[in-house]
Length: 381
Image 1 (tube, rainbow, N blue to C red):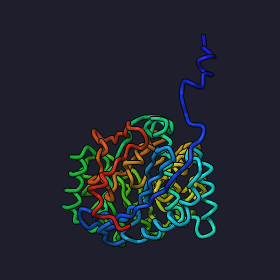
Image 2 (tube, one colour):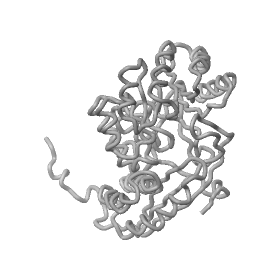
Image 3 (cartoon, rainbow, N blue to C red):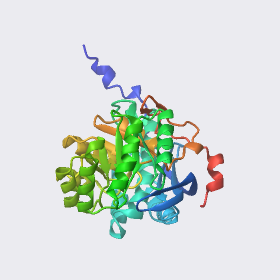
Image 4 (tube, rainbow, N blue to C red):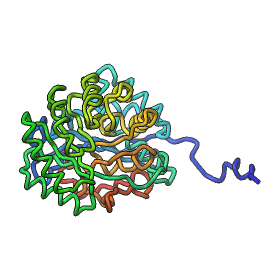
């Protein structure tokens, strides 16, 4: 028989009635890449900007979150916006009321931009708030958010547009050696025949059964994309990512409906409403969300539920060490991207990857612990 007394005993779990944020600290790092990398749109990249937020309450509870940008572009602006415009909104507030704080930040910023730098700053703070709240509950984030499965299938996302075929195959072997069995390569040339040659080489190397994806980084027109996907059909691609700009919803729908290859897109969508529109019109098979630029974990979980309602599986872009916990929380997870913009060299506990899967941390919060002494040499502000 159910013991109603034990269920109503408030002393079973002790939470403070009042909690207030004491400080919000912001730091900016320019993190070097192991080697220069390139795609069809952004050109060669040698580093990325990492904007870190640290939140502390009056009684000493802490949470850490971050966002990033390509190269050095925007990093200083994001960090300054957080310091000057968002931190003052948070100090003195209860960090557990994440939805309320998200709305306050959103409406404080929306007039100057509902995407871009504004939502990047909001995202970093939201990620820190969720880390803090899960830590308070002494729960790993993946279980705190829903707890579907502690592992997620991973894929290696190379930024390899300028690589030769031999270099592509060497990179692919490196992913396989690291326990990653699914691969994505960058494409986006005008020559479809040249792209077919590169895709065919990787497909032959992988064999017929492993997942292979391609990423155009928005380079093509609708007509180019449709010609390409018809030529690529023979290579059994799992998806084609961002074949055109995400703003062209009807164009994405045409490629998804008329072409033989599923479309993935979303890393350049910056609100749940943009995802809802793209999913509801049938523009994508694989919504591709990013907690660094969407509005943080709060927004990503809402996109996951929208995708579930349309029978779509969610994939993620970059920040794999935190995204793994988000995907592990939901029943409609697709693949976790293992991105080349990574902070692995500065992590105290690198993410575990084996047999094709990445495993979410079981430490309280998101479990991402940065070696601050080691990364200090790259701090800008």
